[in-house]
Image 1 (cartoon, one colour):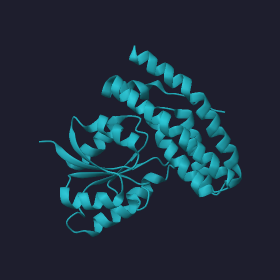
Image 2 (image 1 turned 60 degrees about the vertical axis):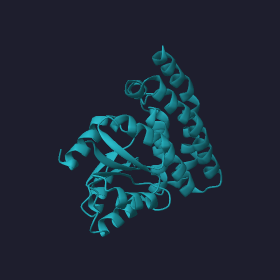
Image 3 (image 1 turned 180 degrees about the vertical axis):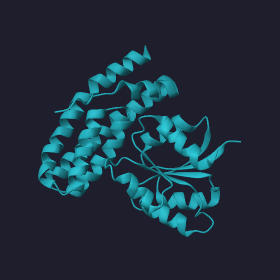
Image 4 (image 1 turned 30 degrees about the vertical axis):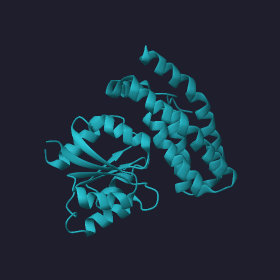
Length: 119
Length: 122
């Protein structure tokens, strides 16, 4: 559908440049701790048809994903947030699934980028 | 002496990132919610405020409204930080009285640094 990267390496490289391995690992651990909770919160809210909560969880996920350069996950979270904001709630369950799919793809490339920079 | 900025942001990852961008140029006071920020800003008198719009509880727009309503703080430069995607958001937030608007995630930290420098007049 589009050519979004799963992980944009510039974000990971920047973390390493700004704060070395310590900052990079800290941000990645925060991502690994928070992203699954937020993906789950989106899924639970979608299952309950609670669109407002789904949008809030997706909004938080935008930041969480964006701070480590998880571009596809960030965009999918934005898509859901925007669908709720513009009243396209029929699309929300499908967008929730796409968030979960994007999240499932992000772990390996992030770990690879981390390994490469940590040397 | 470094200028002092208030950073009002509920997400810990975003706070860490902001510190990584800004610590060598500015002193940052962190606040995780609007009520703490209003109290702390009145006491600490920063030179500029970086304000997340989507705070839980009192949101950034309300924090801005209260800052502007206080004659002692009304002139403080306030930069909105938001993860909102809509193209019309910039006009919306400037219309609400924010001095500037920076979208998250911050793809190029120069955008943030330039916005801060512009409003500090330095």
